[in-house]
Length: 236
Image (cartoon, rainbow, N blue to C red; front, top):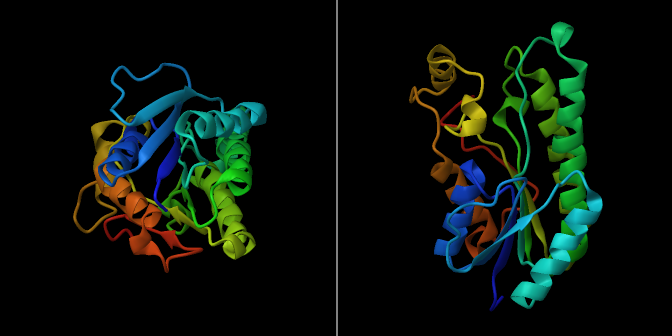
């Protein structure tokens, strides 16, 4: 594809912001979304759009806006937007918090992926971020993990559905990554416990995950399809 256009949902901070930077470095023109506060510094070759992923009309509209502003449909869509809530055992988990996870991480992701399937250019890529915790059980993490496991099910089905158009569909499932979302509600002891899940005894950096996403969006990953790739520092 001569023109490479990426649309990153949840691209204003953390893994999303690192992904925007990695894609720009790889020659993409990049559109990205934010929820409330527009980023202060927007890099050349990028545009920011305010989108509530729980509103299907807003998700649909941003695809139209990107096609108008960049002159073509996106060639890569990254479904990175999501939330976390305070962890807790299933027996004590706040039902309202579980509904929030479902609404954003499942329904919101569905809205993104549905419009991506309809609008991404033939021969393009769709990539979702999930979590390695889908395969590594963590006490207190069941509700969040369940919301991301649902996204992996969507991704795997889409990989079968869109192959006829040459669209590669994958997910990236990091282990603990040092972002604001990861650190919310954690003290240093909790961060250390997360670091101990890797034999390298550290948590990942956003740029390390973004590099994997950028690889999957590139032609170098032309034979990678329907996969859940886990950049998690050996958390097995």
